[in-house]
Length: 636
View 1 (cartoon, rainbow, N blue to C red):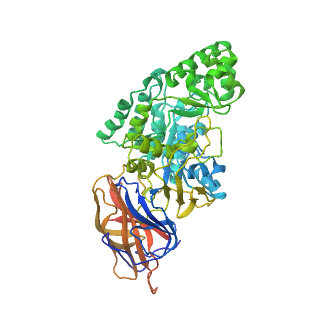
View 2 (view 1 turned 30 degrees about the horizontal axis):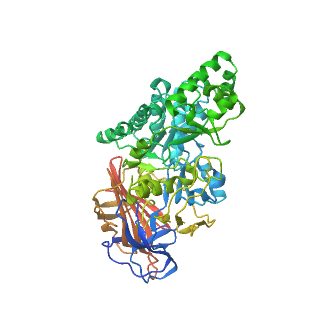
View 3 (view 1 turned 90 degrees about the vertical axis):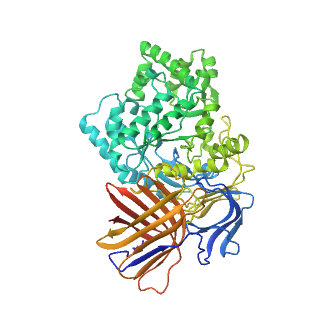
């Protein structure tokens, strides 16, 4: 990657033209012509062409007559950013093809949810890159994995040295590019950690500007209250200095119908100055290990073999069966809420066959095998309320997979939202639903250059038919592919063409930098202003930025200028894309021409993203230009 001699060698002048000034005609690799753009930022859909050059979006607008290697007529179709799944249980062996998620329009998956995955993210990334990727992949650093590695499977209190070791492991994961800290406090043995212990460990991420996403802990002491679980997640995030994310948010069992009260906790947090977010999938049942959320925690203490030994003790078995039945009643409405996908049978059928109670049937099944279960939990009114919440992303709790006996969300989540909850039921608008699949999840985890259709953004795109898009997967036939996703681009390459996967392995592993802050989306009018000297590698220059984007504006407008004493090198932007702002932070994308000192002419326009942030009492500027080494500068 070439280094741009901004300061210490030669000089640079950077000027961003007023948005609306047309760049000189250039040849594009691909133009999607005549579609309706739903840009991810919540802007009302509008008709425009979208041009791609290399891995980036090069232009959006009327591109009639623009030279291109290929033009695809997408008239009558909607063109959206590729969908970003921030809760992915992708199977590594399926990621080189990822057909089940590509045909949903997914282009990016964030692994290690629910606290899982290896703490060694560098090794995980290298393994994923070995065989190529059909979609982009990032990863969380998982609390559960760290806790298990240090504390083990037993219910015990960690020593002070063990807390410090876990903090160091978590910090190493962030240094390796983790997109946040994930936890699944409902799963053992992380379930055994006290709230204070969780805060002590995850607060190692304080100052990173990132998020804490958690599968809420529901306890028998709180009668398996979803509201109590959500409250704990928000407390941990606030006390640890992280943006809390309630992952696959739901209102379970006996609390059904109380979504407004549970969602009110997010509103209370924001009014107190602590933004909180969530994600949700469009189903009324989840999937987990049969025993994970049914067998009491004390019975799982020490792992599977210890649990099986307790099953063999008659007194402990009776207690386990009784508590398992209480859990099923309060969480899933009783044994009728449990379905076994591997065999395609209801738990109630197994009970009848065995002639035993629900709790006893679960114990017997677990003695034979460690199987999964579909667990029904909710009410449609609660689901729709959560879907409507402005801070709730859509995430499928699925991932790239070739499994055929699984949850239908693996094959249907995103088309189901679009077909059922937008077109058929009107719960969401097209623009609102796409925002929840793209820019909102991007902002939640800190992505700055994906999740929107704008100049300079990566060309991850999903083109679908609004009249036909729908899921076809069911609990009985969960591997049926959806309909309506016609074209998908990953980093500018066609991954789905005319409804068929191409086999392209254009995905990349994504690494988070410290300037990529978790934040709310920028929904109102915003402005980015800087005027000061900048330092980088001992050189000095002056950075002047004044960029605006109003409500409903399709692109930012304004000026960015970086000047040094002479003019050996020039960097001149030709268009601006998306401006995003949050407290103490702002970013803007665009395209720029770069001419290096001593070279006859400017090279082709390059995509860039500029981030300005307040970083520990100082202001920094991070400039990333396509094909050029990133620059991080201190603004005086």
